[in-house]
Image (cartoon, rainbow, N blue to C red; front, side, top):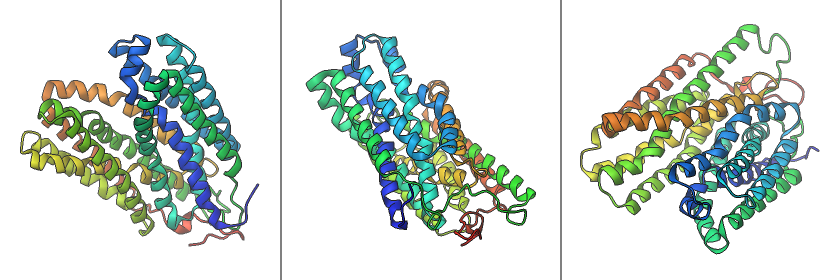
Length: 415
């Protein structure tokens, strides 16, 4: 049921952020209780890794299907059903034992939780004008590290007090809250304030065949660029603590603080680059700049791995901020370039490509670093960053302008 006020978009954004954070608690937060899981269920380190990867495996398998379901139905139904199912599977996880039953339950929870990714993103794109979309999507994307951080804070205490099952039941309760919030407050934007990125072409003059082809090429370039950039992000997240602690001898606590500073800085930078993109007619310009900045930062970090910690620590934080900040902007651009009526599918496709690349990168690059060293390992990520920048330069002539996106109530494009 539509609502009358444009200000309601902040409610939709808040619900979307809470829903995304609720799923991040187990997608990325279970590692915080890894030792407790191993002890309670008698798992080896390899078995623990398999268990922790189960939610992401389910997530990747169903992302595209949830995106298509969002286009077919609406965000409210998809988010409510998905979060309710997530809660049910997390609750089931709290009662089973054994590696494979746990993996299956967590995998199903991940498969259901993927519903939030495309649906909440589509809701934000539809509610916010082009001039605020980058900021809104950047803010929404901060919910992922926030959810993971919240889990890292609360889960160890819960598990210490009541065991693994108690922790899972708590996470299930959080997802139930997300489902209730989605059903209660996610609404269709009325036409008077609706700013969908997936408004169909109204006539041949509005979007010609050549313009449609250009839009598809630009969408493909954005997806490929995001897939390249996720390599840089995954390498940094996976190995920077190992570089600082295992290779350079910093204490684990200090290395963890550097990692945390990069994460917090990166979350803030997601908002900053989103705002930047709102004030430029070419949405891809900040993403292009950040890609080349990433490439330069990777080269500098690769050269600094054996140098002074006084240089290596701030450089690690700066590079970390660069490799973390781009997600929200790429997500926004992909949604705005989606085919008519296919925003959810487009967001699901982009996320699927990113997470598939993220799942194979740690093994490939970990093997390379073990053979060639940290200097070459971190320096090498300059290549995908530069490739992403070059792909986005190719789209420079096909700028995303406000007149291509927002449609007013009377059917005419508006700035």
